[in-house]
Each structure stands twice: as C-alpha cells, then as structure tokens.
Length: 579
Ligand SMILES: [Zn+2]
Image (cartoon, rainbow, N blue to C red; front, side, top):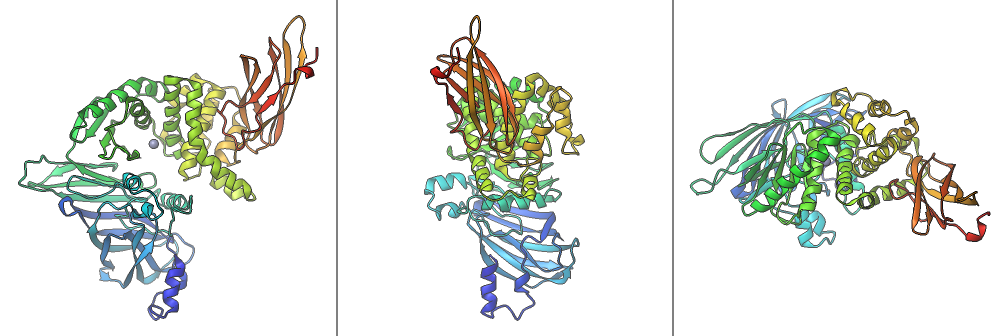
C-alpha cells in the first residue's frame, strides 16, 4: 500500500525525515537468515522475540529503507543496526497475509544505503499476544464459525498452535499487501516470498513456560524444523533449539499441547484427550495404505508425524514433517486419504514442488482408484482441477506472454494450484501413457540429490519407455501451454465384411498443450476405448473397430484436464453409416 504512505508524506507529516517516500520497496530485501530467541507464555497468550535477522538487497537499486512486518497483535520494541538503535516508524499496514488482516510495519531508516546484493544485520525485539483471530475472513463476510475453523492459530493455555507466513506473521517479513478478496492475489504474494526464501535459514530457540503447581502433565512441543531437540529445564520450563534449512518450502510452525501418542513403526500420532479411538483409527488407516504407498514410492524413509487439532472442521495443514489435522470425527476413508498424502511424503521427497506435492496428490488419486475404481479417481481429480482450469482460462484471455509460459511452468511455479492440482493430473497422464510398472521403476530410480537439471525426471521416465516424452514435458512441465481443448471433428463409419464396423475419427485439439487422450466409441451398452495423441493446435485421426453400429464417440474420460469439455461428444447418425 504505497499510496497510503504517500498520502502521509503529502500531508507533510514525515517528509522532512530521511525517509524517501517514493522508493519504499517492500520486497527489495530477502530475509536470508533468522536467529531468533522466542519465549512463549501460553497462560498469558504472549510471545516475546529477540534476535538478529540478515537482510540482502535483491533489488537493482540501493535501499535506504527496510520494511519489517509482524502481526498487528505484536509490537516493535527495538531495532538496532551495528549495535546502535536505528530510527523507525511503526504503522499498521493492511494485508491478508496475517490472520488479523493487518501487519505492524516498521519502516526502518538504515544507517547507510545498502547497495544491490549487499546485506545488513538488524537486531530486533518485539512482543505481544497471539489470540485466535479470523478478521481477514470475517471482514469479507465469511461465517464466523467457518472463519475460526480455518484460522485456528493461537497461543493459549489449552492449545498453542501457530503457523508462520500466510497465517500468523510471528517472525518479520517484507511483502506487498495481499488481499483475499482479490482471489489469487494472496497466492501471488506468498509465492514470491517463498521463492525468495528458498535458500534462507532460521535458527530458532523456543522457550516455553507452562503453568506449574498443577497436576497437568508436561505438555508436548512440536516444531516442524529440520532438526529440533527439545530439552526440559526446570519445572514448568522447556527449551527447543531448532534449525530450518530452507524457508522456501516450510512454514515455520510450533504446537504446544497436552498430547498423548499412538506410536507405530512408521507413524506417530499425537492426539488430544478423548480422541484415542480416532488416533488409533488414523494410525490403522496409515498402516493399511502403507503397501500401496511403498509399492509406488518405496518404503517410508522418515517417520510420519501427525498432530491433532481440536476443531473437527479445521482443514488439514502440512509443512515439513508435520501434519496437523483434526483426528476426531474423521472417518476411516478421510483418514486413509490424508494418511496416503502424508506417507507419500515420508517415502518420497523432492526439492521440486511439482514432484514432491504432485506425487503426494497423485497418490491420493491412486488410493481412491484402489478403493473405488478409476471413474471415482477421475472424479476426485476433477474436483481439484477446477482451481487451475479457472486460472488457465484467465490467462488465456490475455495475450500469452513467453515469460509467463516459463514462469507458470510446473518446473518453475510457486503457485500451489499448479504444483499440487495440475501436477497431480500430469502424473496421472504419465501413468496412463507409460504404464504403472515403468513409472514405478522410474520413481524408484529417483535421487533427490541428483535432481539438478529440470530434465532429470523426464530422463528417468524416458529410460523406462521407448515412447517419446519430450513434447509432453515441453507442453506440461517445462512450459505452461495452458490446457488442451478436444473436439471430435468427424466420425466416419463403414460396415465391414463379414461383420463389424470401422469408425474413422478425427479429433481436433484447439488448445496449445498436447496430450494422449482416451477415445470411447459407444455402441449402445458396449464401448471400445482407444488412446490417441493429439498435439496442441492440431488434428489426429484414429480408426476404431466395433462389433455393433456405433451411436456415439466421446473424446476424454476426464483423465486429461481440458479448458472446455462441452464439445467432446459426437453423435453418429445411423443413416450416415456406409453399408
Ligand atoms: Zn503435501
């Protein structure tokens, strides 16, 4: 919200200071390292933080101002550079990146302008409370209960559960305003932040003081860091010394609750009092789907960790090794679906989101397919598809720009809808094209540490199949060519001797992305399915034999995402069949 700040300047309130109003770039700095000591007092809902952050100027211009943002329920105490206090102005800044809908923004006048690519350390201190707050949803008329189920973050005596970027700004960030009302706006701001933070690290020392003198057991502290040993100090105090290796893919999150645990060889479930049966149910579901996951992705390499949320309507949240999900009230089917995703992460990991998340969602489709069959699996993928089809049609309305083709590609995108939902469909299409066995072999040969080039995965799959996959990866992974739009152009039927019919079908793809798509020829209750590759902006022809006269030709069974599926059916007029 540059304009807001500018207004203040025009009013002459701040312009006499060293602040240069017209060069306030909130995203100029990358926060490359955090070294924070955070103390939490659940009884008072308080959080106090001190420490050092390192900011690198990743803009082209020198920066005299730095913007540090924390949640509006926290206050800035001090900001020092080179051991001396620096001048800063703290103001509320509206942004839906925080659950309160507002950030406490400190605009810091740096001692010297920081040149491009140079860094500065700032010593910071801030404190405040983190109560439950769903203002960003309730102010756009989301029903109170739904808003609170979604934004469940809080520090409290019963439960402390606080997620970082995108939920509660409990460590400083620098971002442009994000609005939930603007649809994909919040997504874009979060994507840019995560992209900038890919190589950023955090050293977090958490100290928690809990109520003493009660008969309550020592609560558990869970943190989703790369490493995080917890030590119990004196009575009622415990400490954790945690390291995050990359903040690009993890949302730093901590949870403190009186959990009990179900501990199995491949999964540990932390559950809240009274949820014993649900916790066992979840652990059972996880063990039941383990063979499916192991068959596709190998045996779990890390123990999956699940923690309970008290509100049964809260959507699951995963980050790093930790999954937070309400255990009570989730039937075994939902438990199976969630556990499939979680165990896939435990078995297979990749630094590339389209592989890491795409496969975990693909595994969920496999699970539905195994439980109920292919049509249900395709329906399940269809519900995911809505999100990115919308995004695609928005983009196609505008003139496609070549930089968007690269930026929105699966290999580069930080957009969740693409690297989760679209990637899931891409994995399903690959499976249909090369077959289960080849894809499983390719995945088994994957080594995350060797995944240096964008073509690495393609080469592994290519090694298992004689088929050319270059065009497919070009259209779906390396570039964003949007979605295909199939249409049955014509179906010409001829009676054969001594029996049967030959149908010659021409399929057009009006979209720019090619795909191999199922063609179904129906003759009453009977159907014959063949597969046909139709490249982007082209036609392809296939001949299909049937025993009875065909009455309908349908392109795509729902396994290939499409921008327009309303033109996929062709009715065969019986009088057109050549005898
Ligand atoms: Zn995931």
